[in-house]
Image (cartoon, rainbow, N blue to C red):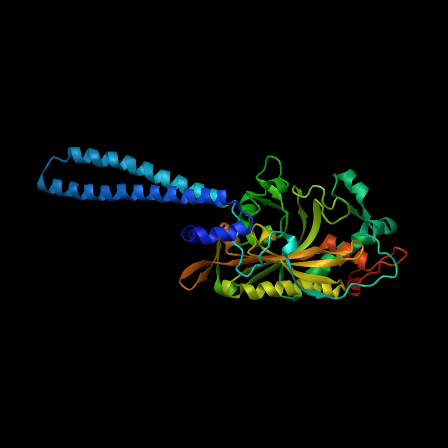
Length: 414
């Protein structure tokens, strides 16, 4: 959740940041009006409390002097009822503020580039040069027909569109990549974790998927449970409502999970192939960090994902997202985009984000900072999306006859 005190005290400055991220000013003005209403309700409550204290002192004086206290007692009793009502009203408005704020995205970091869409993202660098083919490269769905690696038709039969079946060496390649990614992450100090693929509502609210993006989630009928859209949810929430010791930080975590997304806002996009699926495999990195060194950890996570792509021999570029392309919870994001020769373009294969205190405030993840408890910073990123890596290997390692070579780094896994 955003820092409501900062928003209330620095309304215009904070509003400018959020508008750049695509938030409607009317939404923020509504929140500001709730701030004002809550402030007025609190003042009314505190004024009545002050009046109660004054009457209580007067009551003691009357009693000591032997005066008739019955009228004063009746006034105090009536005032108690008013005070309870005002306190409840202030509490209800405070709850409205909290609930409304759950739908407001994170503030972008000051270093984030200006821009309205992905067209305004900033390329930082390119790693490895794309291969020059002596033939026209095929797209991955064409190669899957030749090799029998991906069965799109039976995926639709078993479920619906945007599901697929991996077979033979395609299935083996997925398993090899998962093990390779986990091993690489462990070598960088990430603890491997096996987590539930179903989480409850509180966990998804903690990381920011709920309440705003409920339409994009697969909910378990008659249960307060959802299929996870990413391992970021269970990994981050391992420490939901906990206070960690400063010497425990950072917590570096990695996990393989399937991910489930309705892709509600992607109608008509990437309808063919494996780029955008309702179910896909991913190996995730999550860091729970001391704010003092979270930027250093952020850059380490970017480097780790990039190193994995380099070890696979996959050309890619590093791109910093602008204001308008940042995700809901992200304060800053760097994407890695892999080169797909069949599509003749770079496509996102990893997003590394820092949410700073945003998720920690929602999930109540703190650490003992001297004598006080402070909010941690949380970071997350893919290392890597497995399906998109399969696509990248197929297109970059294809031969003219449609066969696909296996990268040297994966041979021991296959």
